[in-house]
Length: 290
Image (cartoon, rainbow, N blue to C red):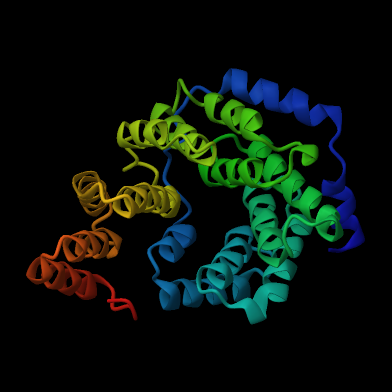
């Protein structure tokens, strides 16, 4: 990271906390606002279309914050590990050009997370910079719910001595409980799952209507999959099928629900049903396991 960028996010002045408190006190509208179109394209896996638009926007303005942020999204979403340096460079240029952009700091946090070598002592500087980038993104725009989810993920994964932990994560979730109760429910579900309270996690996530939050679909899917798989592992087939069915209902563009139902059917010896669910899964997205 360039020296100026590191200096900008490497410290956490008290004014950040004041700004956060003001933002929480004045936030009166739901965060479920229309997402950036390029981010939505990447989330929908419309990679060629998104890449074309990114190239066009950068040709017009090399400092375009949405295009630079989407560059990071594209590289990470496609698992292009050989281009992680390019992703980090794009995020740093975005922050340098737009120091008041929540989108740019979110992109920087995501790029730093992708290039991290784990929560090791040798990575402490990178991990602190990641935390500061996500926190800065939320302070700059409390309505950036994807950045809020990224910060929650950091709090749940990073060591306590780096200012993380489930207490911080729950506080972050409760900040938007009045304006965005469904987003809060998902965040609390992730907290409960991290604390190995699966029943609470299930209750929270099933009570959440996340149709207005398209950019959290990955976390939504992963949580439902994890809860359903845990039921399947101990042969609670009805509960597992119920959650995989809910996953299919909520996220029909994903093959995960049908694939999970196939696993349940196979475990019960219903091979014809398993084949049907696999066929449906393959029709949505052909994968090696399908």
